[in-house]
Image (tube, rainbow, N blue to C red; front, top):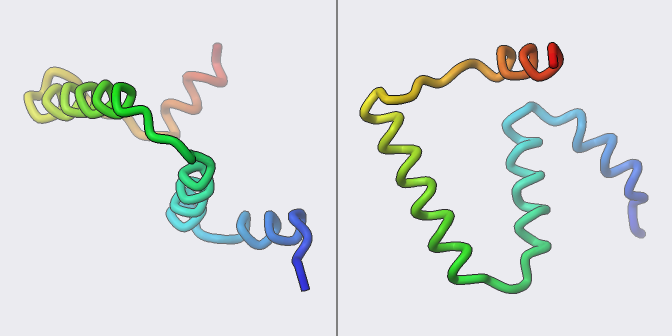
Length: 74
């Protein structure tokens, strides 16, 4: 018997934050049927650049709650 999408969503929304994020990532990943090697390489370069900025102290992180507050104030 198949569960309705609304019921699955209700159950998913009851999960802890990290579990919801992992589930969302898995669902999005399941939609990618083809790999664009150029895009993957570009993302890897960007991720490495950002990690280097964090490691060097050139940029600082801010809490997600602060990001949401700033976005809501726009």
